[in-house]
Image 1 (tube, rainbow, N blue to C red):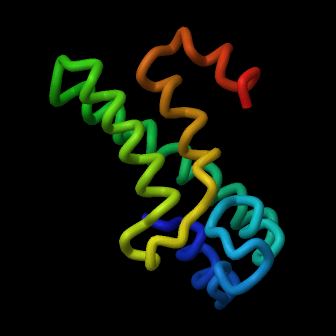
Image 2: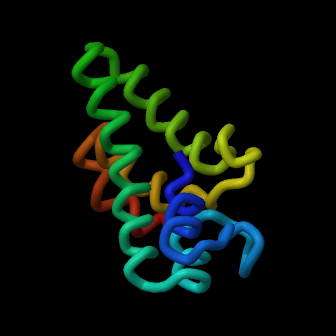
Length: 113
């Protein structure tokens, strides 16, 4: 679900992919539509990956499935089917994904970015 595209259309009446970097991510929404929409996009994108991993955890006992789900959420954000395979850069989805899989990875993720 490309929340940047949705926010751009609902709040600003524009397709954010036609402005700035052409990305659907938080930074381009901030430039194109404004701060409130960008914060909403950031939180929704982060939540998208966390919910996906937590659902995988509830439905299976496999860490491999959780990791695959996290990677699928990141790939779906970067190449969204419903937005012509033009999405964000994957940062807001990618950062919380390993944290959801293993809480110990939380401290190392920002350092590597």
